[in-house]
Image (cartoon, rainbow, N blue to C red; front, side, top):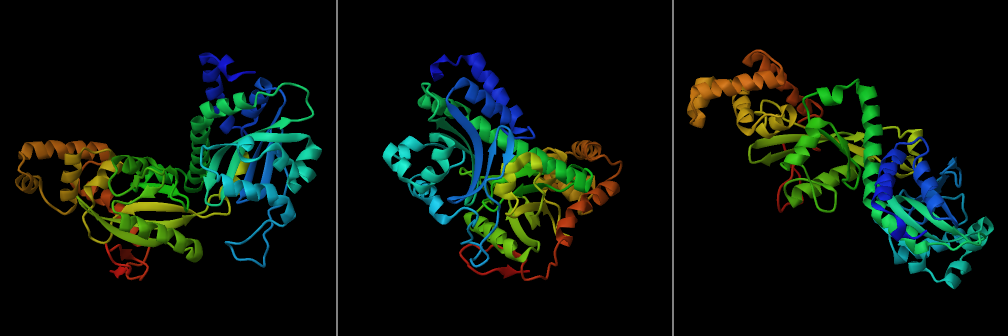
Length: 416
């Protein structure tokens, strides 16, 4: 089959299949089956890796054990290897990684990396691929986390005497790539959110605290509604061009990623106190340990043994609640959030009107709008409701030396 024969309707159907297939028990089963029907002479599967070492292999029929995930106890965490496949059989992947490293959504064509003669000379080809009757392949990286990644791949079945449209399957994967990556993220977020909802009985979206969960590379995996609004607002937390989470300033971002590294070793929550235009915000960063479900076999390989991190945003002590947080949590307007922040400090509508230069009637109307959005009936009840933001301050000891404020131009932690 030639890629040029795929019409708009068929491509639309394939894109829909991508999103359905990401949610299947045997993930990507329908997609792999459909693509191999469209392109005779190809064998489809998904694989997961740690650098050049195989973790697992999955076919459209379900999960097939290729290797047991056993670590060499003699090596450090950074140097661990998988011992189930002799190291001499990793020769092909070792060379491949020096020539083309996996990139999320990237597509690798083995013919761009190896000549026929070079491919056939590898131990892995001679002992694994040749007995299976497969040769050159095209692969799409749909999950990447540090040294671990997972791919959907389609290899030519050398024994099948049919013309194989290698370039056509490559062009199809190019068209589907962004949808496969997006579908994978949606699927992962749904599974993580489902587990969190089960564990906390719906607490995450009900609680008035923005929450974002990301991996050690800062890639956002999911967030509750307030956390998503916080990122969209682009205040304290934002997503930078490369896809990783970032704080407002580069030196703050460096501290956050240092937190991630420290937490992988210490496993204890830590805190950061930051300043934005509207006032201070306290963040609590804690390890997040979901159990990746069997429905996401490749994700278990990529993420289950890596720590994810939950970032909560709130305030500490008697500090006024940052108006931006009020916008994120309760979907208030900027002025409604400003009024709420003043109410928490005990100011009356008349005092707020004088302070802001607005009419007292306008302030009272905004207070009423806030009460309705927050779901309370009085300013006293509003103050009590907003006290939940101080949960973040209670998540760690404010006198703990781990708590710090990033200080521009300094390599030291400034303690509180």
